[in-house]
Length: 73
Image (cartoon, helix red, strand yellow):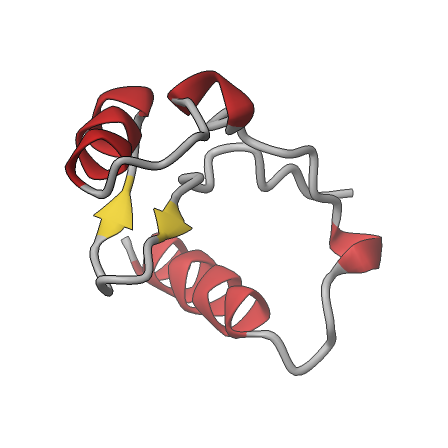
């Protein structure tokens, strides 16, 4: 079983920019006078395990590429 908890958590905002932390979200929400607050969002990584990842996923390809590179060392 693989642990993908190292994956970054971010939100793509309506302006196309990514909010990677509560500070980014605060700046966006203040600029657009939104009723939400950064505390309404969670940036904690989710627990994702291999069984929930599609077999066609880029994660599988990246994992295989990393393993191949490590084997060649």
